[in-house]
Length: 491
Image (cartoon, rainbow, N blue to C red; front, side, top):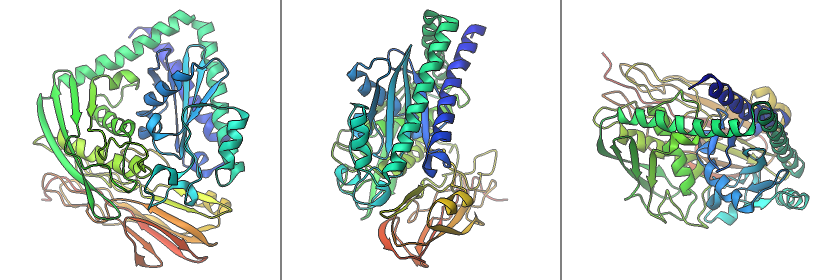
């Protein structure tokens, strides 16, 4: 890459990062301000991702579908499109996406709002059966004052929702100014040519890395824990030359619960795996996804049809897709042991407050190293809300917050430990937990031991992986997250 291309590429990535900084610093809710559950990116005139901030994998890989949907509105400078519909480029309803026109292409942000209405506070019900129960559905729509009023009127804590949405808008206005400044400084045609080359460069680098992989076809399967029973995900991965095809034929049909995935989320999980195994340090653009084809039968768990409920599919099923595709690409030699494979979603709220967090756990060991402990892995890339910020803002008290010693699997390289997070509620409220790896432990690899499965307890009583229930002031919720599997037999 020549010097000018490097400079322009760095400038575009800086715009995406600065968008994220503005959004995080301006947000009202802890979920965005403290946990940083948001993502930003820059797209070119053709709707191709050119640069992204290093934010949330499940957001970023699905963004191209959102931009394609927004482009149907023929946006002009100053206009902003809002959407959250999982079947027109969204992920799940709390993830609200904005798309705006810039001097040269589009700016995009996606932020997880702490509530968008629906049957339960925080919009993460464990027992939803259709999308309408999970919150307000917004197809690609111009964001006007009237639409904003409609959005906040359908959500709990309207002032917080309005503040978070305005923080997103501020990020877009910043991006519009920065792209205009870059075009004025470097020349519009030069910047356009650089965007095109950045896309092509990423594609060439990933194709070259895929060519270094052995050709072949491998399959793997695993399950997610539904409210009733288990649901199978099956993937066949074919590497041929400089392309990868990932086919989910044989995966169970979509179900009546909310573990279903729209295809955009499934693609996002697959893109994440391929990037990890090919060029993980490559400045990401949409070109890195071009060599990857994802196929799934319509109406199956990972290509659900509207109005199937999807709120846990975005977090839990996407995590299992990563496990399955990694296992398949491992072929005869496992790449690593399984990590916690869940985001451990915890949502608490009533008419006065809504709070949401995901909790990290143990990652699997690999042939060269132990697995890290207490981290958000795979499709999540968030932080945890600091104790001080949590207790200052919400009627909650953190009773315990420490590593879950001994939860990582044994082996030549040990799996990472999970964590223990214990919250006492100080007001009557509703609790929803969407988690995985309660019934089945993260598996070790190459003779390594399994990690400990996760546990959810309310006042000391064991709970299922998915639950929604009423809490009284003084009740204690304890989450013990899974440990990662170990790699290799211990000597």
